[in-house]
Amino acid sequence: MKVTQPVRLTMVGGGSWATALVKILSENNVSVKWWLRKTTDAEHLKKFGHNPSYLSDVQINTRKVKVCTKIREAVRDSDYIILAVPAAFIGDALTGLKPEHFKEKYVVSAIKGMIPGANQLVTDWVSEQYGVPTKRMSVIAGPCHAEEVALEKQSYLTIASQDPDCAERVADLLRCRFVQTTPVDDIYGIEYSAVMKNIIALACGITRGLGYGDNFQAVLVSNAMQEIKRFVDAIYPKHRDLSGSAYLGDLLVTAYSPFSRNRTFGTLIGRGYTIQSAQAEMNMIAEGYYAVKSIYEINRKFGVDMPITNAVYNILYERAAPTGEMNGLKQVLQ
Ligand SMILES: NC(=O)C1=CN([C@@H]2O[C@H](COP(=O)(O)OP(=O)(O)OC[C@H]3O[C@@H](n4cnc5c(N)ncnc54)[C@H](OP(=O)(O)O)[C@@H]3O)[C@@H](O)[C@H]2O)C=CC1
Ligand SMILES: O=C(CO)COP(=O)(O)O
Image 1 (cartoon, rainbow, N blue to C red):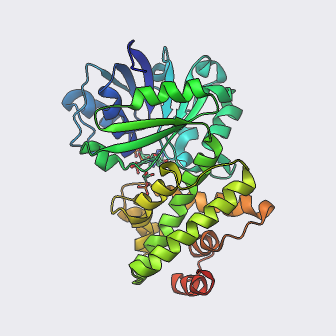
Image 2: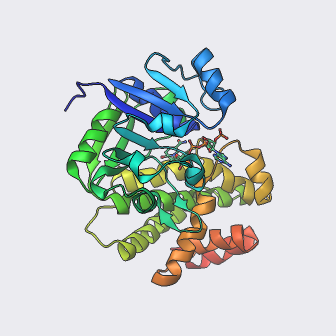
């Protein structure tokens, strides 16, 4: 199905992924209102047609893309709202909005993180806070780094929704010259897998920072796939093939790509940085840092065997030494 009528869409977020998604949408017949929190970035975008803080080489067509910093104004008259800020900040970004502002709209989460404290998936949180029906919710998944979208490198996205029509609509919006999209129905399985692959990428980074090689990382990633399967099957049982690109593909790109925020953060921790200094070193957010706490806490109820997640949790939240945790993992991986 090709997009034939102009669609009105709001992008919430001013980081790398929001910038890349605006670029993709600009290829299609979509009129975008783009909300950023920083007035200085918004003004710069309006004046010079690029985001000064993230992916600044991406040119934005300001005739098609209207920039604003007031969230109510941004969502007014939109048919679709795409959420693309880290999960920890989504509550701040949507401050002032009420359920009525989401009425009759499709809400798309491009976020691969959990709401800290509430330990909720973003789609569950949005449904609960704003009463958005599940048939109007979808997620954008798949192995896709914003930096490669900026370079127009061939990429693939998976759009998951419980409603096939909703998944198809969003897949249509995001299909373009260099992006293929596939609609699917496993929204919760995909959302959890996307959250968990960030934790695994942290583990890969930590081992890299400690000096482990590719041999160990290959074993770590294969064991991680089984860990993700055990957890996702326990929390949301459904027949699913985790070798698909939205599951295994996303795990691989995040575990191996130098663009990965989570892998980079993990590498710094493995090299001996403190959490604060690693965060300060990166201008970007590693979702896995927040997610590992949520998944660890959720798993208290399920009791799934998750040695890799536990090791990352112990390093980031219990001040355990990375060397000791990885020595422990060496004994259980196979
Ligand atoms: N980057 C990618 O390739 C991909 C990212 N994603 C997901 O997209 C989501 C957004 O990540 P991404 O665009 O990469 O983020 P970035 O790391 O590129 O940018 C960080 C974002 O977080 C915002 N931010 C930082 N601190 C705060 C704060 N205290 N309060 C409010 N906002 C804050 C920044 O706003 P400001 O600039 O105003 O400080 C900026 O929008 C994440 O869930 C990520 O997992 C999914 C697929 C690919
Ligand atoms: O989800 C991603 C790629 O598909 C991005 O992962 P990072 O946040 O680790 O860069």
